[in-house]
Length: 428
Image 1 (cartoon, rainbow, N blue to C red):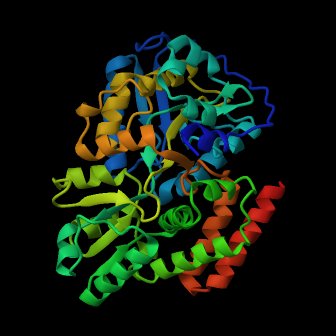
Image 2 (cartoon, rainbow, N blue to C red):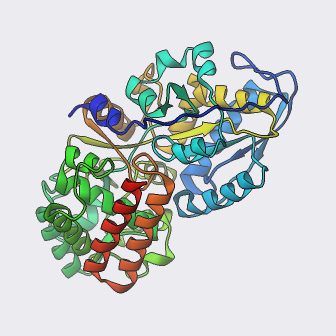
Image 3 (cartoon, helix red, strand yellow):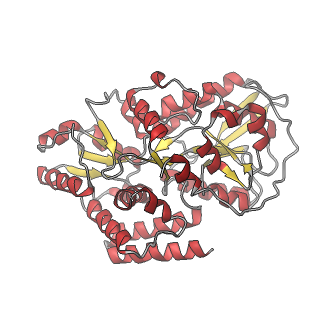
């Protein structure tokens, strides 16, 4: 299954929404500032590390393109956005929206659309020519009932292993030859454990869900993995059960303080030589670059074993909320993040790749060049942990099951929790 088929299979259908607009601002055009000016609160979970660096780079472009507007940072830290999403939901429910908020492209957007909390911005796509510069498969994922509700700032790959070559060599492992399968990887993890280092660093609940999705992808393959989210793959099947067993085995090689760490801490263990491997999205690239790590020498990357040829996809995107907001300021922000200048500044800092297709790959560092090539050629599947595969409620229930397993080690309980979550959400 190639890229368009894989994402189109996850496109949300059957929703009907009459989006209501806000009339307190006028639409802007081009890259310049709007007429009304004023504050523009941008709500994100980019509060630290490379994510904050990416946001800062984007804000600089926004302020250059829109001198009449004042950027207000509404970032809420922690949990791959889980903390921010809770705060945002409270604000939306009390009719106190920011000018724009970050959301993952894909199924995550359906919650906001069904609640009539975001507006249709299809006209902006037509006016600014974005339909011509964003790839069609991404546009398909952003489209609900012939309408588009957000603008993507980037593309990330989730199924990436980050490794410290020196740690591997000390354990007698050749860093230039990645393991071809989960079985091969587990054999390496055994050797690393015997050498006295942490074989696989990991963090809190959401990073464990991130690991789980890559194991499901590796063990089931792209088609069956995609089928988990539309009901065509049975969560109670022996194949899914075996994949969960593999996940449980991998977790046994991780650091015991995982619940106290977020992704930057787990990534830092690779940089410091305290751990051999880490599975994380390619926002981690910027963390390595910030500490002057050289790609191919100080660290290496490869697809999670068993997922080579597959791009586990997510995209950060921004919305036009319903409510009393500075609409002109929101549109100015959306135009900046869609612009070539905004996408380049943001993605160079954050470690992701542009959502636009009219980019010169040679302007990006070596890792990002590999991601640009993979996105163009690999089978694309939607990320679970990062909102492309499921609505927020289903992800929350999966996260709860994974968190419980991290505490009690009951693998049968994890399997039943995942089955229960699927049955509940596929029926709704």
